[in-house]
Image 1 (cartoon, protein in one colour):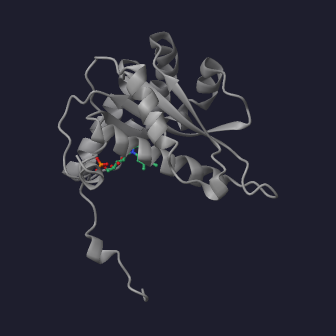
Image 2 (image 1 turned 90 degrees about the horizontal axis):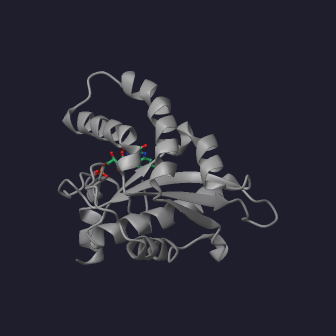
Image 3 (image 1 turned 90 degrees about the vertical axis):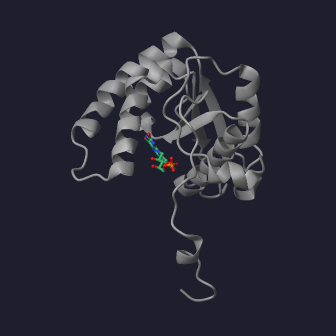
Length: 198
Ligand SMILES: Cc1cc2nc3c(=O)[nH]c(=O)nc-3n(C[C@H](O)[C@H](O)[C@H](O)COP(=O)(O)O)c2cc1C
């Protein structure tokens, strides 16, 4: 599979087989993440892989409770795609511990050195996470970006012993897919290109 094909079909995967993902594969995914660009090549990223069942159960219980209000109060009038997205996200949160591995993409606020900012920290971690997701797709591994850490930052820090100066930026679910990858549905490229003038 070439890179463009992987990008075109790396739908968010929220349903996984129970089969574990080997640490060799997880290491390759983080290798791919760390080939990304970062401002000034600052590379202020860290990746915490959570594949221990007890750790996942402890974090998962907090995420399930923390996310419940969002799912209970989901917007009305969702279309088919949005309904499937909410149902999938709820399934993912409620089955957190059954996901073979979670990769917590973390950032250090260290760029630019004279005035480190959140903007540069997030713009370091997200391209890396996207590299990881495309690499996963190319290897037949499913992945889903999440912001579940917003509901469970404290317990994640405690369980994974993440220092205070390391910020939680994204949580990516990783596993062998239990659903088909599909072509991603995105706005047509013609509708977003502006040649020289908006
Ligand atoms: C920054 C970011 C945060 C996201 N957070 C979540 C999330 O918390 N839970 C979830 O199930 N999906 C999450 N997603 C996945 C998107 O919902 C998904 O990519 C989008 O609905 C398009 O679906 P597709 O990638 O399958 O085409 C997130 C994606 C991004 C880029």
